[in-house]
Amino acid sequence: MWVDVEGDRVVIRGRAVEFIEGDEADRCIDRLAKKYAGTDHFAWRIPGERRVKILVEPTSVRHVVGVEPFRPGVLGNP
Image (cartoon, helix red, strand yellow):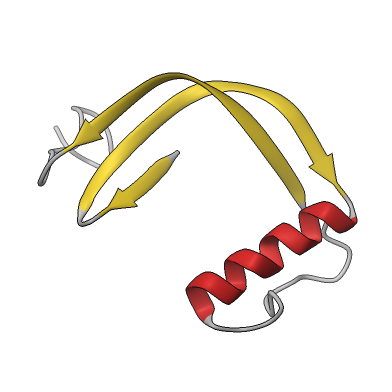
């Protein structure tokens, strides 16, 4: 998972500890849509899709300052 911190990035690795579906997962995507898109509801749903909210227990956290090149073999980087 990548998190934007004032232009820098944070890489969080971990294990999934809980999977949440249904109304709670729908409310979560609506909150994210409100925060990032300014809409009350996530407007890009596809009929029949299911939302899943995954809670992650972090096992490592790394703060990446500035631009970091991709590892070799990732996104065409030789």
